[in-house]
Image (cartoon, rainbow, N blue to C red):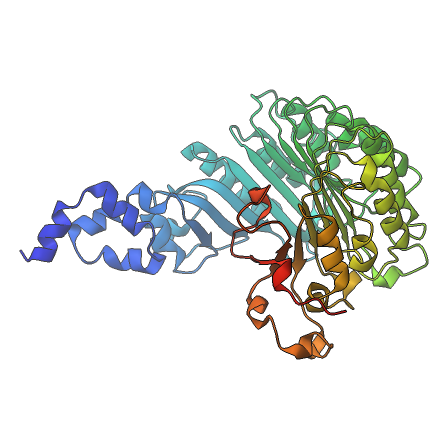
Length: 489
């Protein structure tokens, strides 16, 4: 026996398994052929419990599922023909903590066999005892009433889940009766629930919300396919009494006003589309009354194909301005982080004007994230208008495509802002002008900053930061002192 083998034999099992957990899958498969001890360790749960396994058929899946006793996540597609019995997820012994299944890719009917396979995969993982999350993405096709009921019923009746995600594509057409998924009482366990709101998913969504009201912490209804929901069926009406709900992501829909009664809610992301006479009063009431909110993200999508004079949020940006006005109306808002995201070249003036007016009435605001015109915004920020503001991030989307942030870095407006607000930290999404042709880019300076997504600017003493938590240190942001930047007049 050589010294390397002796050393291997002396190493504890948990240490070797920890090392093997960082190896590539092909290396783990190769190691099991080297010696008997490594062959046994290749099946150690610690080697696999943090891995994600993609099982899409073919011979490659069989050795993985035959070897792996567990996994962090298993993802697959249905229909999928396993190459052998070891690669069959309907009977596998590999216990996953999360399961992700993609179904349907045509306009044809997704038949009982495909649904039965999906249900069997879910139930097999439930039986193995580790399953805590299920994600079902239905790309397209027709799902008959009986098969839809079986599929959603499997999701609703799987016990112990902490996270459920249901995504349905725009080409889906389901027939679902109101009783879909109702399989009796069970102990609430869900903490996170994501569901695309469509006519055929509303009943399932409401059933899940009602059954897990005691434990839900995050709810996401932000699907991309706009589908009106009747006020009496709106899932939002079920959120008001949830004791632990902290995060809500949704678009404009009926029932938003009732969400204000959820005292535990702390974070809201609202997609301001579609705006209608039915849902806009509720959105305004929510922002006017929900003083418990600490984080608010307003997302204004903009479709050039539907370009008109209405602009951001309809009415020439007036509804977007109305939302900001409602947030600041009481002067008692506790929002600490406000993000305003505008996609496209929609008019911004009403939104910008109202934001500047609202700043003094947002006393708790510490961080502001915008992709609005920086010229108009920077002039309105002072210690008097925003006394608590410590962090400002200006990002670049289509709405600011004519802005060179290298030029802004050298600008007198930024220097003036930092002079007026010495406690402020400003993050710029560092994108320069096209082909670096502006009068600042031709200087050839700050080329080292191009490797960073963000450039942060501060004015306080380098060794005496009043809020060090505002200095992002994750490698994405490079911080520079304003005195180290040449201001170009």
